Image 1 (tube, rainbow, N blue to C red):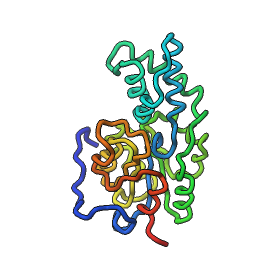
Image 2: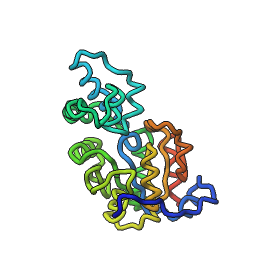
Image 3: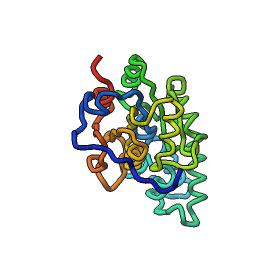
Length: 244
């Protein structure tokens, strides 16, 4: 798969917003980002990076500021907490300390967002597979998914190092589609970051922006050109499931 890609052409003349409109009511599977979409993991992520600060004699950083970077992993959290970029010499040590802290306390306060358990139950009742596509590393993704109680019901779990590319490249989403055996054109991808929407569109999937998540980008979710934007997880079901 080439490194450079262009999103496939899509007719957006008809506004999305109802189950009948989104993929013409022909959604067969739903894929989700993990942090900030399925699960509210920010408290544990911020605690991990703040421990790096306090271990170095610094006061904890403000939660509300750091929370916005929770979907951006070590790069975003360390950048916000220390003003250090991945190319800086100090970054590797800070990253390793952060990851060690996080791995040691992976799911202390992390929880599924309100409305997600009911949504996943409804998808299962309809026989619609769902899966996870995250940029989180496998060594963190699989234990967290298990601790959140999702390991037995997810049709696939794709991590940031599962394929040679991570989002916004479409490779992880295309791999997930192959794993669940459903064409991308019948799949909806839900995420709380601009790169999620970029990856979904590039893969030829319909996209839903989870505005209830961390959304730590300069652009507001309504500007991401997703096919739909939801303010709470409970609003996803009407978009992806046609009336029974």
